[in-house]
Amino acid sequence: MGNLTKHTFRASIFMGLMLFLFSCSSYNDMITPYYKQMASGNYTEAMKELEKNKLLQKPRNKLLFLMEKGKTAHLLGDYENSNRYFNEADERLENGLGGAMDAVVGTLVNPMNQVYKGEDFEKFMIHYYKALNYVYLGKPEDAIVEARRIGLQSQEQGDKFNNKDNRYSKDAFSLMLQGLIYEYDRDMNNAFIAYRNAAEVYLNSKDQTYYGTSMPGELKKDLLRTAAAMGFTAELQRFEALFKLNYTAEKAPEGGELVFFWENGLAPVKQQEEFFFSLVKGEDGSLFFTNVGGTIIIPFSNGYGSNFNVNSVQSLRATFPKYVSRPPFYSSATLTDGKTTVGFEKAEDINELAYKTLQQRFLKEMGKTLSRLAVKKSAEYVLRESSKGTGKNGNDNSLLEGLGFGVQLYSLLSEKSDTRNWQSLPASISYTRIPLQKGKNTITLNLKASNGTEETKTIEVTGTGRLQFYNYSTLR
Image (cartoon, rainbow, N blue to C red):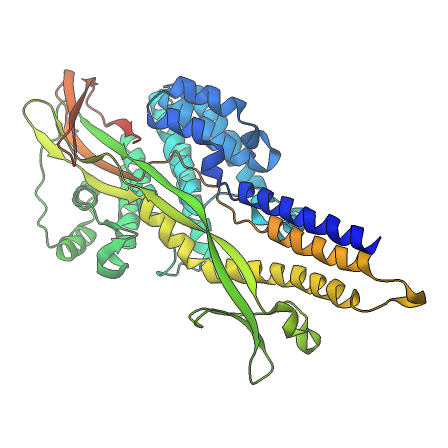
């Protein structure tokens, strides 16, 4: 019986190792057919791949499923259904995701099996697409509601991190978008407030750069223009001094203006990275985790206290997600109406946001991961120690030994970092304004790749005298 048990568990470990290698597949690997179609611009086929993907059909991935469907429907021009998906995603976020049992799953299994709750910047991007959808559907009142919700989201994000300048406590791009939507509604007072809030984010940041984005010159001009329009002389003078600009009133274009958003490339993907830690007792008796070389120190506060056997956790293999960027094919772009040519300014660097926000929460989340692994390691240690020698009534403890192997195998197989994220988002969003004449306008987007490849996209816009929007994606 004892030998059979040992052989059985050793065989299971071999099989488990094979399964382990398979389990190392990232979320991106498992959704590859969908993302390939997206990158190729085959949005109809992408939607088909999305709807038949079994992983995204799982309840824990519902938020991801809705965000991807919303984005794909938007690219298809199906703005009504796009907002139906985004509104459902929004509702799930508002009602809260996860719960007590979900937290238990994260502790006993791994974060990949928990309900996906979304990255902070992904929540702002939902509002971006919803607002544009409402504008394209000719529903300005709903677009204004979305602008107000950007303000509420900003307050919630600020409260989350106590408005710390070194954390992602605001989203400058979303605040700028809020201003544009208010201006679209000819509400210059609220447009000024939103532009000012966006500018303050940059002004309060180191080198006036916020997560890879410098303050756009267009934002400066919008802020000065709306301050002048509202007669806010003191504010106008204050920002003229800060920006080192002198505002000169210009006649508004007869046909209005087009705000053109260029969504370039694809957001980075998450992959799994390995770390090795040991649990160490300090001179004061406190326990902490340290990696090889001692470059990372993480306190251990899981309630075990001095009774916890440090020797049971001599080595831990921990995993954590890391972002891997996907360099965009196109490197620059211009917009022209045949007379005027304007360049683009980067307004949101999702690539940089993803890297930095993940880095900021590394210590906190790695602490949770290591505590979870310590629980598993402790259970394994107890079983292995109990299996040594001969048990009561002369019986051997091969079953306990087998259970020890089983726990060890379970720890190996279940340790997996969460590699999910909204991967059809662009790597960056740039924007520009171009004046329109009354009536028909032919606007051409000129794209250039680093290898010299060029491409053009031409659209027809009817100048109506008011602000208009257009967004274009180059997701490769």
